[in-house]
Amino acid sequence: MNLSPRRTAWSLTVALLPVPLLALLPGTLLGASGAAQQVAMKVIPVQGNVYMLQTPAAGGNVGVLPGPDGVLLVDDQVPNLVQSVLEGVRAITDEEIRFVINTHVHIDHYGGNEVMADLGATILAHENVRKKMFRGHHAPRNGGSYGAQPPEGARQILTFSDAVTFYMNGEEVRVFLVPRAHTDGDSYVYFVDSDVLHTGDVFRTNMYPIIDVYNGGSVAGIIAATETAIALSGPNTKVIPGHGEGFTDRDGLIEVLDMTVDIRDTITEMIASGMRLEEVLAARPTAKYDEKWGQVSSWNAKDIVPIFYYEAGGGPSNVPRRGGN
Image (cartoon, rainbow, N blue to C red; front, side, top):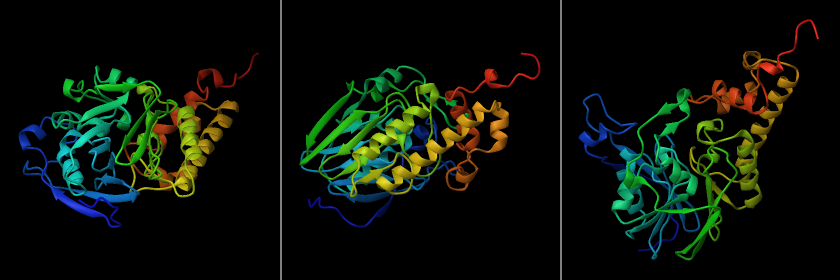
C-alpha cells in the first residue's frame, strides 16, 4: 500500500460500539431513540509520514505513524470512539497497530487502550500516568468530575521516567516528559524526520489552557512546557494540539504562550496591589482574550483565573489591612 502523504482530508462515518456497552461508558453518543449516533472521523495528512485523526468536536486529537513496521498511535480517544479510531487508521493503512503512546491520564486520550491492547498493541506512557490508572479518574472541566478507576486492561505495560525513542517506519520518534503542565505526566511526541510535534493537552487551540491541579498541573509548567515546544520547533514544524481544529505551527505556540504569560503577569500585579480573588474576577484580567479563547462553557475565565491567582500567591494574606498596623 502506498503510504505517501495524501494532501486531502477524508470524513468517515462509522458505527460505534453496541448500545448496551455504550450505556456504561462516559460521554456516550446516544440519540433520542437510544441508538448510537454515527461519528465522522476526519483523517488529516499532517506532514511527512504523520497523520492525525479528529472528531467533529476536535477533542483528543490522535496522531498516526503508519508504515511497514506497523502503526504507532499517539492517544486513542474515549472508549465509545475506539471503533472510529480504528476505522480512521484503516483508511490510511492495513498494517497492524503495534504501539499506542498515551500523552497523559485523561480518558479522552487513553480510553481506547483496552481495545487496542486486545488487538495486540503495546501501550506506553510516563510512569506517573500508569500510577494514576490505579485510582478513580478525574477530569477538571465543569468544576471537576470523577469517574471509576480505569479497567486493568487499559493500563500501560511500558513506562519511562524521562524519555524513550522509537525507530520505526523510517522515523525517529522521541517521547519525553515535560514540566508538570496540564498534569504531572505530560509527554510530547516528536516525529523527527517528518518534523511533527504532538503536544497532548499541554497545548490546545480551541480554549484556554487547562491546568488540572488535581493531577499535578501548574501554570508555571504550562509556560515552561510551551517554551520547550517553541524551542524544539523550526519554521516548517507542524504541531498537533491535544484539542483544536487541524494542526498549527510555531507561531500558534507563541500566540498561546504570549496570552498565558500576559494573564499570569496581570493577575500577579493585581495580587501585589492587594486584590482579593473576587475582585480579580470582577476586574476581568482575561477580557481581551475571552472572545477567542473563553467561549467553551466547561472551561473559561471563571476556571482559569482562580488557578492563576492561587499559584501566584493570592489568598487572604494579600488583602490589605484596613486601619491599625
